[in-house]
Length: 167
Image (cartoon, rainbow, N blue to C red; front, side, top):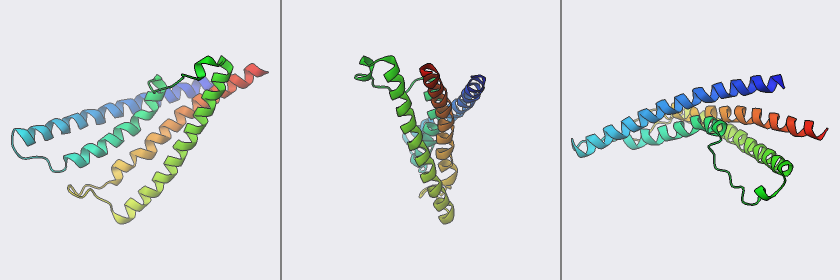
C-alpha cells in the first residue's frame, strides 16, 4: 500500500505541474486572442497567423489538462443507471471504464507517434505563419502519457482494493 501512496503523490505532483503548464498556455492563448482582436478591430491590421496558433495552443492546453482534470475529479460522469447498483458493482464498472480509457489513450499515443514521424519527414508547417507544427503535436503524446500514468496509478490502486476486499 505504501507503493500506491508514493505513486499517488508522484502522480499528483505531475498533475500539478501539468496544470501549471496548462495555465501558462491558457494565458498565452488569451493574450493572443486579445492581441488579435485589438489588431483587427482597432488597428485594422489582423494577425494572419492567429487562427493557426490559437488552434494549436488549444490542443496543447487540452492535452496538458487531461491528467489534472482526472485527478481533481472534474470530468463528466454519467451514473443514471449505475448509481442504482451496489457499490461493489459500481467499483468494478469504474475499473472497467478506466481500463477502456487506458486502452484508448495508449492507442492515441501510438497513433500520434506515427503522425509526429510523418510531420518531421515532410517538415510540416502551418500554411500562413510557416511555423513548424511538430512542437505543438509533441504535446499530444506527452499529455496522454501523463494521463495514462495518473490513470494507471488510480486503476492499480482501485484493483488492489477490490481484490483485497474479496479475500
